[in-house]
Image 1: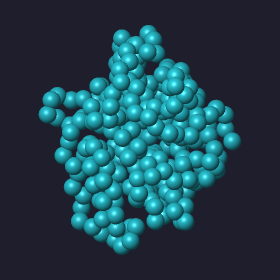
Image 2: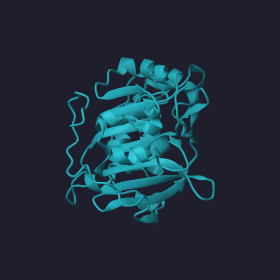
Image 3: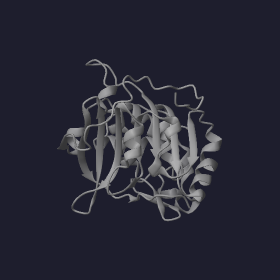
Length: 273
């Protein structure tokens, strides 16, 4: 039996040894409007704090996300709880709650709030997480994040998943993420320094894999480490040479792939630095 880390969360899955039949078992093109399911906007608590520490600042960001069509109340609540300004350089804190990506050093960026919320929402819309009609989606189980960056997305994921394994190939960013996340004391977030293209087999199988860098194809290691019923959300280079979000569902019959909207992420690279 393959050893696994002794963390409390475990992903219940049947037939996790099933292998996909083909990478492009089925492909469909989905627009952001048709991909989103309606849900009541989250109602955040009364504003507290001052300046960027005020919950009113984050509430305004959440309201803007809802106006853009993001309606998953669980994701919106998580976005409203995590203080994004604590993950950006001091010179950029005044832009922390704008819907823009920001540099975090070593040629990398923190993704736009809209993109973070969108990708996590897509993870939660995996068919294997859908309960009976009228009931909320089941919570995410064990999630693998490729590209920790400054740690912001891992912090948001910690509020919607049972366990988060986050891999970073750049030592400087890995250390920065640890420094950013340490005061938050998130027991279900585990940061690893290593080659994200190889995934993290010791934590597999994963109910979801999310990537913050895009390559020409989704690495086979991610496919292998995804549980049956799980979902990958990642940027990928299209035949036209542009990047687009791709969703891959691993079913007992094979893989199903959906190509979504255009995005712009840093390149997916192998090795460590």
